[in-house]
Length: 323
Ligand SMILES: Cc1cc2nc3c(=O)[nH]c(=O)nc-3n(C[C@H](O)[C@H](O)[C@H](O)COP(=O)(O)OP(=O)(O)OC[C@H]3O[C@@H](n4cnc5c(N)ncnc54)[C@H](O)[C@@H]3O)c2cc1C
Ligand code: SF4
Image (cartoon, rainbow, N blue to C red; front, side):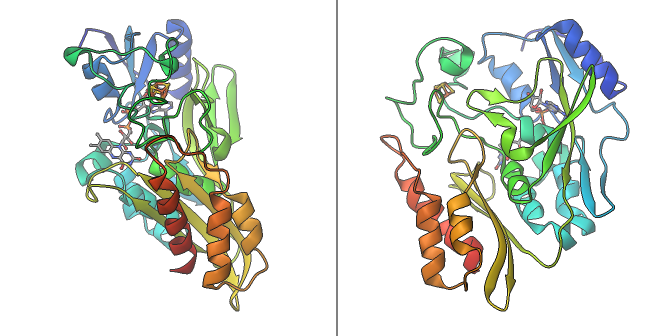
C-alpha cells in the first residue's frame, strides 16, 4: 500500500467539497471492505492522493419509513439491514439480498453505499501489481477487453458491449425489483435517479465530486411476495454467479403486479420487462412461469465460456415466482 492523505469527513457537504478539491484524486472509504483491497492490490493505474473516511459523518446510517417511503442511509451497515424488523416486515427481498453478501464479519463493516458503489470483480481488472499486474484493459482507459477472448466464465451474458464485467452488488438487484431510487449529493445539492439507471457500461452515474447519501423505496401497496435468490459457488461467502429478485402481487392465483430483476448477468441490473408483461394478469402456473423465464433471457448473448449462466438464470426466475 502506498501513502496517502487520510481525512475524516464531518458532513456530506464537506465530503463533496473535498472530492471537488482533489478533482478525481480522492476516494471515499466507508466500511473499507472493497476499497482497502483495491489500495493494497494496486491493480489500478491511478493511486489516490487522499482517502476520505465517510464513517465520521453522523446521521447517515438510518433505516426508517417516512409516510410509507422506505429510506436507508448510505452508512447503514448490511448487518443492520439483515436484522431490521422494519425491513423484515415489508422489504424481504432486500433483507435476503443483504444476508447473501459475503460473511457476517464483512456485513458488520460493509455499508449500503459501499455495496452499491463497489468496483467490479473481473479478474483481469483486479490482477494485482505484486504478481505481475496491473493489466491494462478498456475499463482502465486503454487496451482491449481481455475477457472477450479470455476466460469469461463469470462475465456478462447480456448488455455487455465494451466491458463485460458484471455488477457485483446483491443489494442493487433487490433494490431494482423494489423500484428504488438512489440519492446522490454533489457540491450543488442532491439529485435522485432510479436505481436501474445507476450503473453504466464502464462504471456508475456518480460524477467526480458526488457521493451516494441513501436510497428510497416507494410505498408498497398491498401484500407482495418478495424473493432474492442467488446462485454462488461457495454458498457461505461468494459473489453471485446469478442473482434474481422478484416482487409479485398475486390475488386469487392471478398476478396483478410484478417486477423481476436479474443480477450478475450484465454490467448493470436488468429488469426482465417482457417476462413481467407475460405474467401480469395471468393465472400463475408452471407453464406461464416457464414462458416468462424464457422471455427474461431472450436477450442473452453469452460469451464463449458462460452460456451455463443462461440456464441458471431461467431456473432462478422460475423459483423466485413459484416458490
Ligand atoms: C470475501 C468477500 C466476499 C464478498 N461477497 C460479496 C457478495 O456476495 N455480494 C456482494 O454484493 N458483495 C460482496 N462483497 C463485496 C462487499 O459487499 C463490498 O466490499 C462492500 O459491500 C462494500 O461496502 P464498504 O462500505 O466496505 O465499501 P468501501 O470498501 O468503503 O467502498 C467501496 C467503494 O465504494 C465507494 N463508496 C463507498 N461509499 C460510497 C458513497 N456513499 N458514495 C459513493 N461512493 C462510495 C468507495 O470509494 C469504494 O470505491 C464481498 C467482499 C469480500 C471481500
Ligand atoms: S470485462 Fe471489463 S474489466 Fe474485465 S477485462 Fe474487459 S474491459 Fe476490463
